[in-house]
Amino acid sequence: MTDLGTRPLPAPQTLRRAAPALLGYVAVRVLGLVALALWSAARDKSAYKLLTARWDSLWYTRVAELGYGYEVRLPNGDVHSNLAFFPLLPWLERLLSSVTPMSYADAGFTVSALASLAAAWGVFAVADHVYGRRAGVYAAVLWAVLPVGIVQSMAYSESLFTALAAWSLYAVLTGRWLTAGTLALLAGLTRPVGLAVVAAVWATAIASFGTWPGNSSDTESSPASSPESSAASRTSFVRRRSAPAPHGAPVWRRALGMLIAPLGAAGYVLWVGHHTGKGPLGYLDVQAGWRNGFDGGAAFARFVAAKFTSFPSALAGVGLIVGVGLLIWLFVTCVRQRQPLPLLVYAGVVTVLALCASSYFGSKPRLLLPAFPLLLPLALALARLRTARSVLVTGVVAVASAVYGAFWLNGSGPP
Image (cartoon, rainbow, N blue to C red):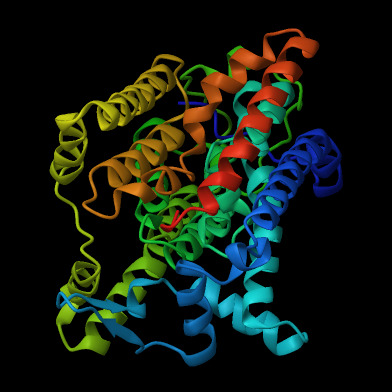
């Protein structure tokens, strides 16, 4: 596990350090939005409506406007309740709409836009801490050029969640346990996969109890380290000891961070159970109404197998198998490169929850969007190339991503 004693740079210096990553991220997202606008105009559709007023975006704005309790009963007996949607995004939509002339949809788009920048900055901060600045820049850009990157510009909760998750992980890596726990709490109020952030905080804290007893790196005032530390010292699993901290302070901070982290997700799930009168497991019933559940990947495996019943669809089946294989290879590479424990736990839980859920299969790429640590091996590889070559590679991928995003979002089904 990496040394947790690295103190974050002061905010202005950190922003200057992250500027190339943020500029690259914005350029990619602008390209995606331009492609979407042109494609949508050619199909006589509103690109802005696609981003703010369809599918999950509508459910979030209804929660912001009317609160919880709205549901749709389908002819097949399924019940789609807005209790399935966690509250932080609609809370922010309501807050922004109450202090500005924005509609709830406009507020959702604004929150998502700002959150996507915060997420890109967080992805950069994590990668910079582990592998250095150049890899951090490419990590942020790679997160932008994902084929489903257009979701980062939608009034969905993925950008907000990724921002909270990335900065919580960064807080763990830099030994700021109270900050990490608070951000994990907020992530747990944003999406069900907030469990992954909680797991990362808990796993790292538990490991640190045994490996860093009395280590002053767990305090909020650990000495600053050089931002140009070598990649080797950042990526090796080292146990460092320094002068003991004040008695009980490190344990207290870690324990309190662990206590705070699950309160958001647990609080909402318990509230849903109370609201529905079905007890602690009431939220599972709500998800069942959407045909969401966790079956270990059995439904997804059947979905993939069904693609091989005819030749054209068999190509899609092969693509899905290759995609899953790529995810497994990336995670194994992360392990072999000895990524810090919190990143491995977080990425592993996000990936398992996405692949093993029995939900709408077309949404699985979107559900994997927050698993940004899987991109770090690719970012490191790009960072080792000459600048011209790495820029060419990311540029080509960005154009392909923009075109695919425009095509995907103009499709009939939700992303």
